[in-house]
Image (tube, rainbow, N blue to C red; front, side, top):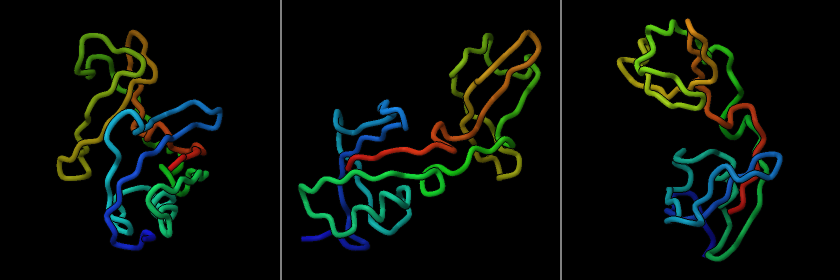
Length: 136
């Protein structure tokens, strides 16, 4: 039976960067489940599973426009070190930030740089602005 819109499916996937490095994979854990056509997953994968059957495999290229969006410089902010909520910043450290414009919702940011007086935070998805390959 082929996958159609509104079907609930389970897939294993491996997401790779342009250089072949694996960014994320479900092959060592439970498969991901989603309802096709419900915007629960990036659109390229949502479309790719249509017409697949159980046991089929597929490899797709996902441009950033259909994946995690463009890299936005406005999502990179520099704050005073004294505003940083932890004793010592570390490159790659993740933290939740309150978003004043969106009724108290939170966004995730990672530390990309710091000095004695400032910490630079990036709220872009790690794959924003990047091409990726998905094996389904």
